[in-house]
Length: 274
Image (cartoon, rainbow, N blue to C red; front, side):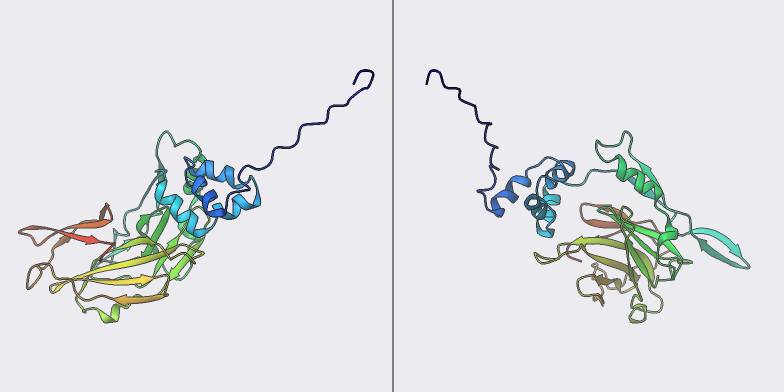
């Protein structure tokens, strides 16, 4: 009206457009964020978004859709550097060394720095350790062994970023043949189910005798070791080995090149089916 001053009210604060969505639909939106860095920024928007983004079931789905970027490599000698003590060759530990990829992927420079700071001296002080495997950002260490006829007794699963570690004691060596050889160990991360609040994993200890390879498997879900039957490899007796190469990983499998002075053999372990 003329002659009357009217004050403009401030614009209303825009309501949260996601408030009408149930958590299942909101989770589907957050799953489509392009990177872990984007998810971390979304998690600080509000308590609801954070609760969804840190739930174990959501994190597992997000990692399946967004495979982790390669940060670098840990390199270790496998505990087999030899030093003569009397008439014996004894293995020595070399500190695992981290080599970052160059240039580092965007947004993960802090992770690379923490990996470089990792030290084996932070592991449980119950044994001497050597690097056995690395998977999904975790490291697997075994007791140091003198040669392939010495099967490691203890293992440690370690997260270099947080510094946390899990000690896996007393592999059931007494249930294996006295002349079984140690081929290596593999670390496998597994889905602990919808109710799992921590990462679940398996440690697979691989041994070898003329009747076939045999696996000892530790499950973090049960906290127990199990010994699987000897695998059949198409021969009544396996060849006696004179040399075993270091394990190589690809597409969920672990490979060993072995020889008996006359022929080469390739042993393949599918960690998904064992």
